[in-house]
Amino acid sequence: MDVVVVYETHFGQTREIAAHIADGARETGAAAVVVAVDHATREQVDGADLLVVGGPTHVRGMSRPWSRERLHAQELGTHGEIAAGVREWLAGLPAASAGKHAAAFDTRLPSALAGGAARGVAHGLREHGFSLVAAPEGFLVEEADGPLREGEPARARAWGAQLVTALADAQR
Ligand SMILES: Cc1cc2nc3c(=O)[nH]c(=O)nc-3n(C[C@H](O)[C@H](O)[C@H](O)COP(=O)(O)O)c2cc1C
Image (cartoon, rainbow, N blue to C red):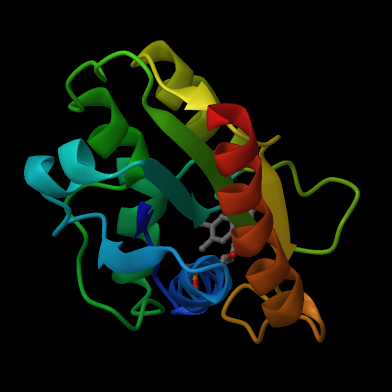
């Protein structure tokens, strides 16, 4: 099974989670690649048995051009300018062929008011014809620029493994 994990990041936290999800998928025997949203190609998407997409929560949802600009204007971001986040990437995604599977995740603050980007990512994936193999999942950061909360890397690995198992069960 080929798993492609696409992420958006500004401080590196969502990339870390993406890497742990891919590690978890590999533990189950799947092949997994991790790719930044501004480098993810159509061939990678088309070739994926399972597409996993995640980004940071900005203003309770997916990032927007102005939330990313604000980051860079304040020179807070550590990973350069990202022309398009997962919101724009999803909007430009071609419709999936029948039987394509996906899952959505985000990183967010440990607050009751945090909201989350993953629901919007999941919605975008469904709109493009993907079947979701799991509910959208959020992973916690201690502060806007990290670090990840203790235990979240292990939880992300377990989630990555669960996704592969869920898809294998669905295909049986
Ligand atoms: C402009 C901006 C708005 C944010 N809004 C929220 C929010 O509404 N809820 C939340 O949980 N975290 C919010 N955060 C914190 C981000 O979730 C956090 O920076 C992100 O998870 C870090 O991931 P990254 O390193 O991959 O960018 C915000 C961060 C920024 C920069």
